[in-house]
Length: 441
Image 1 (tube, one colour):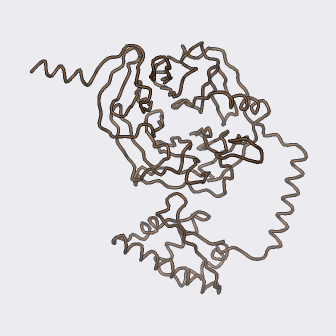
Image 2 (tube, one colour):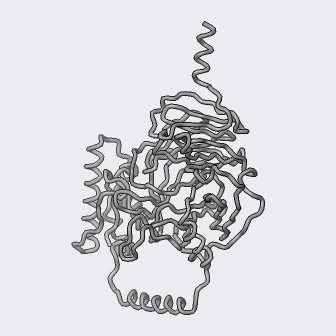
Image 3 (cartoon, helix red, strand yellow):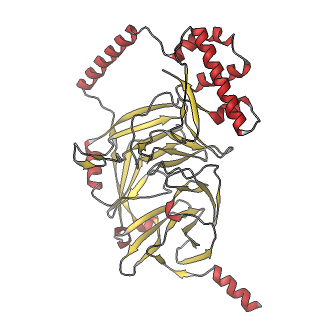
């Protein structure tokens, strides 16, 4: 009996010296929690000690598509996200639990995720033949994804951008990235983004900070010809090449370049994370001689040299000609705005709000108040059902929602003495199964 128990124990925990070796075609994801680094494969979890010389393993039955997961590593929390987005898994050491009420969207590949007050946020991404330029977040209570409301439109739609969240300013910065399609006219793929943009969560506005300077543009073009490895878990957005480590701080407008120690691991590295608790890098690299993937843990001081270079990323300077152009455009816009006498539906409703409210039911007032507040964004059917507090079957909730929308639209038309449709109803850009409602222009 004692011998049997020993065998069972050994089947769960086995030590591997120094490097961890897994089959070349094995699907896996790297992550860390506290001061321990992990490698998750289809049926096994590997963990290493602080010095990285001993690897432990145990079998699991999570039944995850490990090839389709990317880590989101915060100061205190770690998550695994599906690459196409939607599905989210919480990590507690070697235990992984799904926490969302969504599905695998497959519509936000190459998006950039970050934590804001321990809430998962994701910017951009590509899928279903469109590039996303908004921010979505996972509600910790409902476990549903929602779109961040913005007062203005973000016109910069690039994938694989570097994203930084500044907790003090409550702002998200993004820069670089590429277009996800082939530009036949310019005869090259993946046009590089030269804009640095931020979103202020308090003001709910997008703001362009400037364009990358000539020195940074030259650096990016040079780096684009090399293999860049994104480092998950580092405080600021960063990546590593076979020559140097680059850390970007868009809030302070600086990039720090640190040369790396001579290390053959970097040349063949394909995945990387950083553990800020143990100050170690976990690198996965291909070994053609052994037809396998080798996982190594390196201390930060052993990988990066002490000396570093600091440069500016972008310039906010404007030439005289740009000022003239902006001034002329502003004058023209002001002229057309003054000349234009007609108002959009939202403005018409806002001007006649008191008259409209006098003919609305309580349910209709609640709906109109929320549509006015969230404009220019829209309300989804589930949000409307929640606002009204309906507690009916799914079909009854939908019918009641449609009925109140028709009634609200008719009463507003009557009050404004117009036949134009005031409210629109359409399929959500994020989830085609859900309808959304907003003001027509």
